[in-house]
Length: 332
Ligand code: 3HC
Image (cartoon, rainbow, N blue to C red; front, side, top):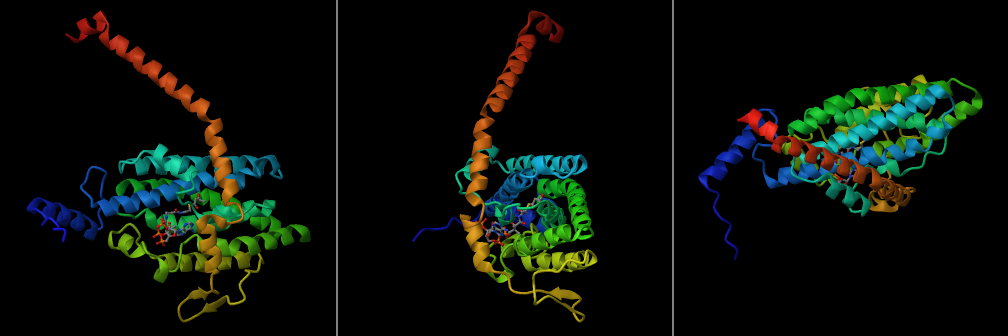
């Protein structure tokens, strides 16, 4: 029978200090002691989040050369660049937990890391770019506004900055949808057809229902998640339905109905088989997305090598100056 070592007084004191910060709604910082499990959960969530931002550039990138006007192209370009920055920002946050981003990126390319299921759907029309901004970034804002209060300091602070940019993303997407919905019958039909494809996958972004979420209880105990998957999903639905109705669009859910008593929009059952199939790598674009990321990584190897060579040269030049007789005299 394996003897579990009895925790020392120091261990118990560290654990209570950690729990006290969490209970107070405070922040755990990189140099603070934290349970290994807490660290592991954060690395898991933050790497998935960072991967989602990077892979999320691909569906929209598909329309950069086909945007209907220079203004739309510039706006989309700015949004895609923001997403790249969000990914790098969150990789930096993950690195404060002692992981190396190259390891995380290798896991993504090996297909062993998760990223948001939503990015495994194709962008078939310009209206999809509007729906991604309005629905996908809208869902991300609901989730990330909650994460801006997460107990891990670097993650929460990253979310505060990212949410500001997400609001621009959502507005530009909603404006595209409003333009199409108020345009010609063909444009309106394009917007409706796109909503029919993106609505349910957007609800899946919030994860499995609470009863099927193996991570939520622990994440909520530790104040990483302040609300459950279902609570956030419901908040997103309540916010989004009136926005769609204002555009005169119809949501593809015959069970949708407003419940006065709860002030919630009740919605139909999510196709969890579809959700888990996409999460497990069998969505419409999973392979294409990973191929694109692997190719971009390989094609970018020369940029990384050049940057590393330049940095090494700079270090050598600084070291030479530091060792020069004149510098030695100056310091003595
Ligand atoms: N896509 C892919 N995998 C998903 C998923 C989704 N939509 N929802 C859940 N999963 C996975 C989880 O990662 C977990 O698998 P794992 O244990 O192997 O990691 C499993 O399904 C069970 O789900 P849980 O509910 O137990 O997992 P979580 O408690 O981690 O909750 C989450 C899932 C709500 C996505 C949470 O991880 C989270 O909030 N992550 C950070 C935010 C994020 O990643 N957002 C993705 C979108 S980013 C984005 O949209 C960018 C914007 O700029 C457009």
